View 1: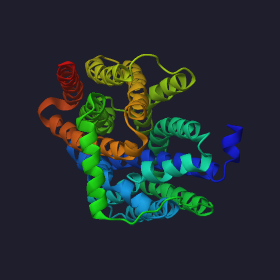
View 2 (view 1 turned 135 degrees about the vertical axis):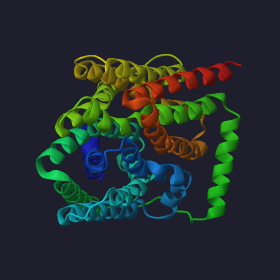
View 3 (view 1 turned 180 degrees about the vertical axis):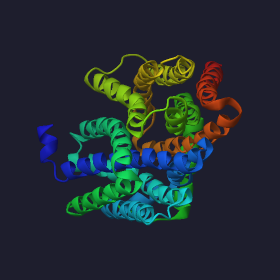
Length: 398
């Protein structure tokens, strides 16, 4: 760690990642609370939440090409300024009393486009600033910070919404994003390789990535499990606010606690795995971690029928977070172990597209609320994920 602190630009990029991700999760919760308050519809909450992650699906395969063609420091700085403007617009509209959920949806699309540059731009700069010897440790520390911000962001979001309202929460986010942009702008950054941006090059890279993935069973299973986990696993987050408000009757601050339970488990498991990596085939850990998350969702839905369900549900989601961390960490492990260096960025692009199935899962979760209720929708996500996992692993064995 002392060596990393001396690496030029690392501390600023690390702070930028931590603060911007915390503000992202703060906005997600505050936006969900406002949308539910105005519309009373869990599906509308799903629509607004899905808008933030939709750019991952739409741009994931091309964003790496863009980050090679344009200075990554400009991408990160410009993205933070753009996020600040989007957040400020929501805060001002809320202050004027004219804010509507669709305004938040548009701002979320803008912020989601910026979030899609996280891996190929800021995270890559983190590794470059640390140098070859410390790059893996720098990325590991940055990943652990992301787990921590997934805990802190919802807690801050619930508290801010309860104390200073939606306008205060989004204006605070805008101020932090602008300050972070100024911080990153002061970094001295030289981009080693810059190639011209070309649609033909992007299409060629995508074809090569697909061709390689088709020939590697481990990569195919990785991509399939990633799709399933984002469709049926992480999409549960869009149910958290309606569940907390309409079923558990929680305050905004306590809904933040509910939203932080799963990432808190991920933070603990990630810390343990960073100190003592798991032994055995990473595919088994990947599938096992995803299955634990699905089981936690089913268990939480069943516990929701108890007379006093809050604490049991928090424990179930916390345990699901342990599986979530195992799944996430072994995603990268499989790519590093089964992919040649010259193809890793293309495979990571395919993984980004698979992660982009997350908003589709949110829409599925929202659509299940009306026929099944909130607890039924939560249970259906977990059961659907387990069934899909069983099918994928059965096909993989053949």
